[in-house]
Image 1 (cartoon, rainbow, N blue to C red):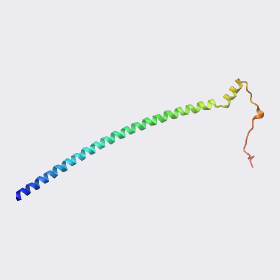
Image 2: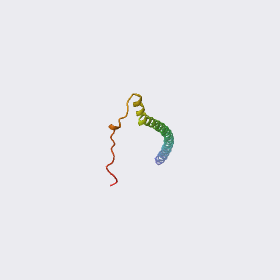
Image 3: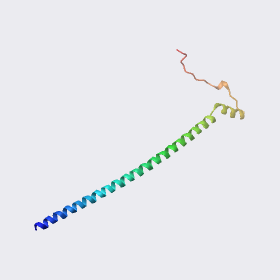
Image 4: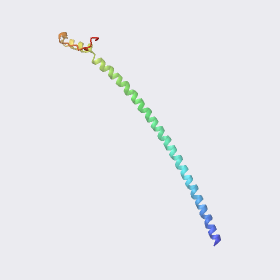
Length: 105
């Protein structure tokens, strides 16, 4: 019986060793899989960030062009020209100028 218990201990020892090796191998495989996944995900996020930056630059350029167009359409000279083409004139008597009350005092 003494030999049987010794063999059982050795078998349990080998089983524990095999389980430990299997667990280590599984952990290493999961680590590598996680690292590859994170690297891939990081690359896709970086690519998306660059695409968004390009979209922002394009929209800013478009906004600048629209601001210039608005400035041209709302200029006083253009308004006076349209009014003159439609037979309207500017009556300087109806224009009121508001200035700051400070006269240098």
